[in-house]
Length: 123
Image (cartoon, rainbow, N blue to C red; front, side):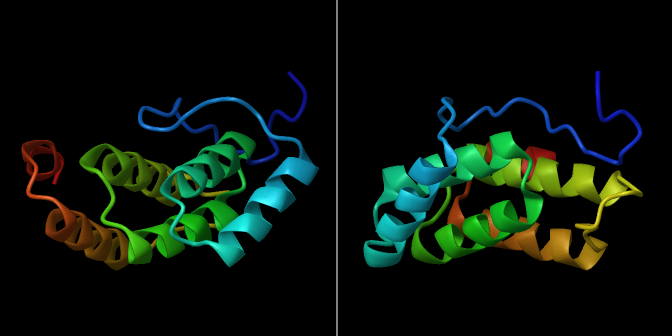
């Protein structure tokens, strides 16, 4: 389709996040609500799902970082985040290239959030 060769990264479908697109106004409203009430877990989940679906990797990373400071993320959410970051690291055309030490630090945080077999196996 259109946009071939423009360096876009296509992420695999989400495994742990809800689907359903928000329009720009709805996303702005959600962002505003989260500034007022950052501990709304379902809204944090929705924001991450929407940013991931849009492929907005800079805002997605920021949203995940904020979310992970407020709540321990589930093993599924950590695995999805780590897979996305590793994919971006492999993409030479991405402006969101991730250094190996950043991913290593993320693994350690994930393992601290949950003692989960699936995290240890993936690590």
